[in-house]
Length: 94
Image (cartoon, rainbow, N blue to C red; front, side, top):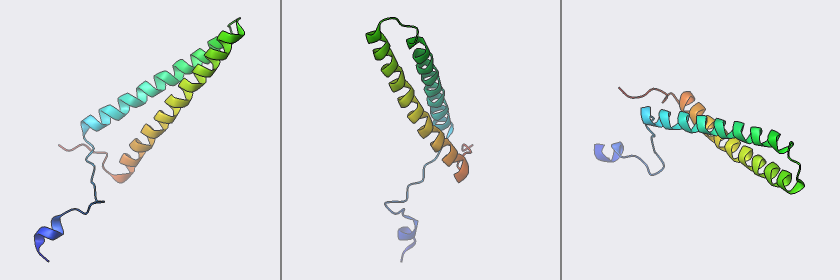
C-alpha cells in the first residue's frame, strides 16, 4: 500500500476546522435566538392585555410559534458549541 493511499481521507472522514468565523457566527446566531425568544415571551405576555378574542388568539399562537422556533434554533446552536468544546476543536488556529 503506497503512502498516497494512507493519507487520503475516507468518504465519511470529514474534519471540521472551527476557526474564529465559526465561533462568531454561532455565538451571533445564539444571541439572535435569545433575542427572538425574549421577544416571543414579551409578545405572549402582551397578548393577555388584548380585548378582542380574535387578536388574542392570533397573537397568542404567533408568539408561541416564535418561542418554539427560536428555542429549537438556540438548542441546536448550543449543542454544536458544546460539541466543539468537548471535541477539543474549540481553539482557533493561529
